[in-house]
Amino acid sequence: MKELDAKNIWHPLTQHKTHPDVLPIAKAKGALLYDTEGNTYIDGIASWYTCMYGHCNPYIIEKVYAQMQQLDQIVFSGFTHQPAVDLSEKLLAILPDNQQKVFFSDNGSTATEVGIKMALQYHFNKGNERHTILAFEEAFHGDTFGAMSASGLSVYNGPFDKHFIDVVRIPVPTIETVDSILKQLKELHLKSPLAGFIYEPLVQGAAGMKMYQPEALEPILAFCKAHTIITIADEVMTGFGKTGTLFASDQINTKPDVICLSKALTAGMLPMAISTCSQHIYDAFYSNDMSKGLFHAHTYTANPLACAAASAGIDLLLSQEIEKSRLRIHKAHLAFKERLSENPTITNVRVKGVIFALELTKKMERYGSMRDQLFVHFKNKGVFLRPLGNTIYILPPYVISDKQLKQVYEAIEEVL
Image (cartoon, rainbow, N blue to C red):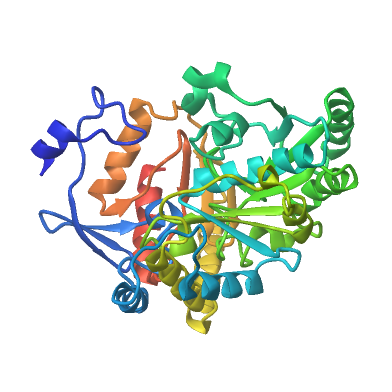
């Protein structure tokens, strides 16, 4: 398998000349991955935060299998189907109350791409001269061009900088800095009226699970609302229970105009994304003029199988079993944080919901050799963690057992 992989496949986020090795995975179940030699690895990051209810969850398999025998795929322009309708009802019932419409796409990048396009075209349709998007420093919103434009991590974006849409940045706020950032924001808006503001609420994932307070974000969102700057919450990573509430936006008083969802949306079963919006956003596109519609489409938009997986995932999310598991993991993380409180090799140990993160005091490159050594160490200990430079983080499936979580903690303690 490895030989054929090396011959045929180009992997994501990989420099194949320096990182030729891959780990062949044969199967997965619950919180475990099994390689082709029978070794097991605890999936400490839920395979990029997707398989939150465990790999090959039998309830989700059952629902997708039943749907597979009824309707597999149909064009979603001019057609509809029950799985999409059911999912829209379930999703809107758990999102903030101001979300009224559901727009389907394929993945996290396209979810944010749609959100950015909604903000820009909202003003275009209303005849406003607004072409600039506001974003945070060190943001990450995906790999398509609009999403890249709003992202602030040059390691991903460097070769494409000259091709981006107009984006300005502000620092991630703290209680101490929010007043000065608001002043900066007012100046930016006066200089070039802002069309929209895209942000990762409370946790910047790709930046290294950097966390900030809802009280610091609130004044920025309030300013945006007061000046008709469309607010776009990128909940691709934070959504579906990871931060302690169903959505990170639930912890903030001012609700976003647009919410972008993917990853755990379909419980790791199939690719799909959704961008939801409030009624006034939709109304700006509702017209006798065809050109004012949102002309964005993907072939597999609202795929019935993916909709069935997502609907089943919401069932599990709302179950008492998963709710108890989320709380159990959160308490275990807090206890682990306390255990590390005197360790001199680390700093900024933090917990948000089921997310745990720390910084090693030793600096290292994001994809450098020392980071690679950490990755190999964890793998040798039967744990799949993927450090972001000197940030080590855990974001486990909700079904992880206490024993498995203990093994993850011990693998980190050995590094320290």
